Every structure is written in C-alpha cells, then in structure tokens.
Length: 98
Picture 1: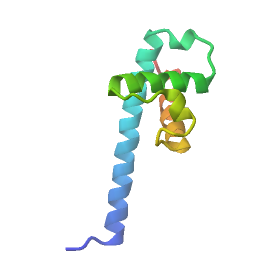
Picture 2: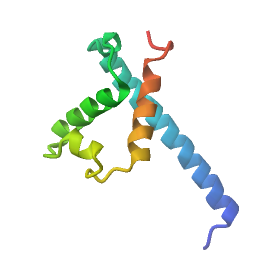
Picture 3: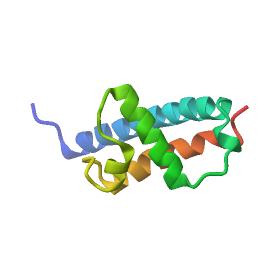
Picture 4: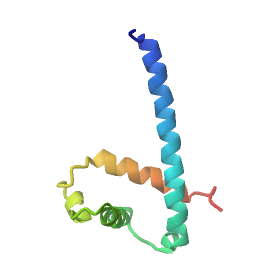
C-alpha cells in the first residue's frame, strides 16, 4: 500500500523533530564535558576550536585524516555539515547549563 503525500510529510516532520531532539541531547552532553574540561574559559577562535574538535573526533574514530585536511576541503564534509554540527554544539554552553 502506498502512503499518501500528507502521511509522508507527517513522517518527515516527526523524524525532523526526533533529529533535533537527538542533536540537542548530543550538544548538551558535549557542552557539559567541554565546560568541565575548561574549554569555556579559553579565548579561542571558533574555527580553531572546531579544528581541534575535528582532530579529537578523528582520533576516536581511528581515522588518519587530520582536521587541517578537512578544513582545506579534502575531508569529504561539506561546509554546511561542519557548520551545522558546530552550531548545534555551541548552544550547549548556554545559560541553561548548571
């Protein structure tokens, strides 16, 4: 049985909401860890901080690629993916954190 377009739209909206909730949980978790590690007290350019986070992610993924290579465009990530990932995480350090 085929789904109607309205049912598909409802499902997409539900999945987008689930994605947003999952990203919020992940951002809050990472934000709490970063704050405990003292990242909030360091004055650092957001781009440099993102590069450092990418290096950490690569280390734990076991990848050999450096964040500098990704920054230069050879990492397979689009600029919007990197930006949206970082933007999601940047909300975690807001005033709601205790």
